[in-house]
Length: 238
Image: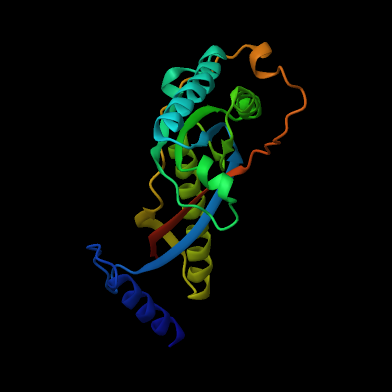
């Protein structure tokens, strides 16, 4: 009786999915959903670097932004960061909204503001040196670093494989509980976030350019890169 109840429950669970899987007493199956994740050391760092300035006039704000931003970008290029690894993120020029803590003098000097920022893609090992270099060149904004691996699709596939292995282990335990034996995999689907692709070229840097300052003000600690997957698997039982 217990075996019949288990099989009835599994038939209802599988029927809830849209896949065209024929299930009957001659084609008995076990359906399992399993989650799993894998981690890897970061290989790529996408840095968010920018320059933000104020001025009493729009023209002054614009000219200062153009001048200082050019220095920052040129410093990156001089350090052999490929141009295709530097992408514009934000670009803004306009009037400011005065903050309550600003004095009257500050309000006069900050009537306009300009902002430019870039996403700079480098290897994880070079992230610290590139941030230090950009700050020395004039960058006054550094945002969160996006750490990733060079091949996120491969890492995602690894997570999917781990989830499927977990699903098989669970299904095997269920089969034993039913007093039967687990058979072949009948169907499997993998639900996972879309892997983010990076336009990335290898950075061939000069040690003098990236390591000129042995004591950086900002210390970066690369994060582990995590990939998750959810697998829905259907196994035959004997």
